[in-house]
Image 1 (cartoon, rainbow, N blue to C red):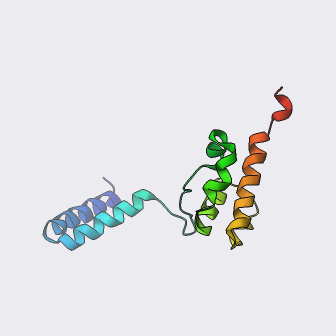
Image 2 (cartoon, rainbow, N blue to C red):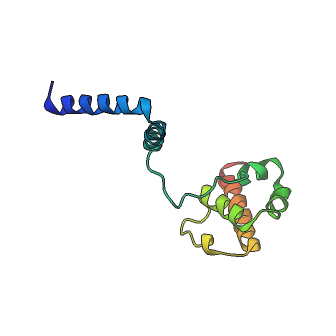
Length: 120
């Protein structure tokens, strides 16, 4: 057994003995292990979108704009971000819902028509 392995075993044996008697330490260790298992997270990750505009457009093409109307600016930005509707990320700076709704509807309709030249 290498000296590194021996030191690691001794460290874990010591930690194991301390965890039994110290609930606060056990909680801190478990929390650290949970965070490590999740992996690195981006601090600028947006909330998942509340709806899929392509699916809604496929089911009821005329109702997409109406479904977007009650959403907040942040919810609209979440849709734009999750469905990659603004590759230059300029729309994430916009503050008016109407402008974001127009972008979502336009991009969704363009994507729905993509490939129409080959369908006939």
